Image (cartoon, rainbow, N blue to C red):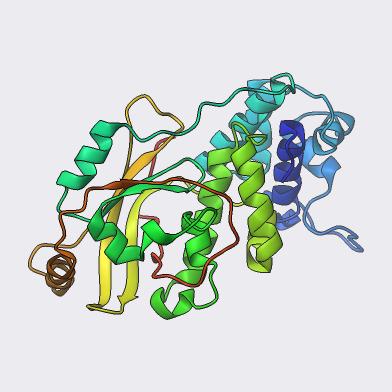
Length: 311
């Protein structure tokens, strides 16, 4: 992962340009094309900027495009709204001077820990880089013994990149892709964040699957969806999940709660799991220490795309 925001912007533009075909934007393919996707000069022409200017953007040089230029590039590259927002976020980060910045650690307030303990549904607090920061007992039973996991394993992507994760998460591959895209979206405003660099580096070393997905520069703004897992105690569960950002933490930690439709088989199985867990232990906050990845654990399944945040 590049810690220079200009490089992140350059790589995103290049990844999107090489996916487009001439016919996607109303151009004739022509003979003997030697590049995959569109040429730089074709994007420049469609956006109404000079070829040299666009080339410098893709080279990660000190170019500061205006909002109008960014909008023109988004139209030229056929961006949907979320990709257009992502482009503007990357460009805003690239305009800032490159310097060492102080970052405030993500902390789960005591009031949020009390909220988790009071909830009858499985619930987690997930940080901006998908680290699991806190959980209640039912969430630990649903997703694995989180209290025993060292960092970096207490991370949603780490949970899904374990060797046996497919056994408990039938939709594992799709979920890894979507979570990787969610991580891309989360780090866009601050690609040089130490935790982002650490996590992406560790995942890239340990997983060829992650390296491929990260190189695609996909993004995802989903804040609710469905998960499917095969639990060793109660069988298959199909649950809805919703993410709620903590007040005053944008970007920052979110409470993620898992529920089932009342009266459904999934609801009955979730209630059975709650009875099996029946423990007065309070919600726990993570204490993080560096460590290698652990054995496989029960993992969450794929979020769907039914609802996307408005950005």
